[in-house]
Length: 253
Image 1 (spheres, one colour):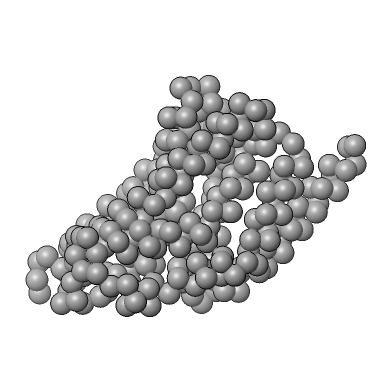
Image 2: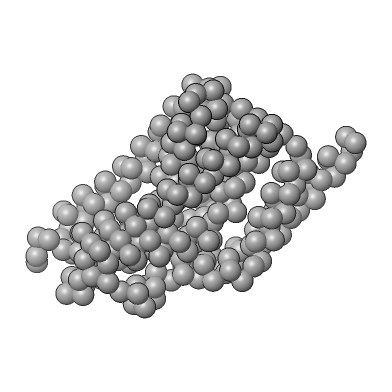
């Protein structure tokens, strides 16, 4: 057995330990930031908005990507790790998939961070990153709910649920190939999950409860056994939540 392939058990274990260490570290840092700002279930964005602005807010969104989106990549990494070494799959390519995936999501994190800073400047979100108007919450829930029914969402989700088919159709060996395929996976993942991530402005930027629920949902949504069955019910649930908030807001008028 070659020492430089993913079929080597010790090397495979080291790679996976490193991968999950990044995820756990991201969660740990977010927990510490939230705990220092009002309890372990609280919000950390208030600290971010009181700091230097965009740079710190971006750092928090980047941590959220590490904590929430990397776990959803695990099935695709498992599939890559099981590919035969003779096909050009190896540790470099495996790491390349992660790097390409992150390279797509980091600009997305920057976009969310910029949106938060601009919205905060306009009074649309508070110091915890929560929208200040219940009608904005309703609008975000409606958008996220409707998006669950869209063909584009379905197409992106189907790629996320079928990483083997994606690799077979887009195969490139080595690190460069991993980067390219990881970027493709990242683009499809963003197309699948951006609306759920945007609900951070409803649940609260860096709310650990929201983050945990959203992460669990996005992981389940990418599992081929159940992912296809979750999309529309989740959309319906989001629309029901929007209606409930709208009725509450209407009572205060």
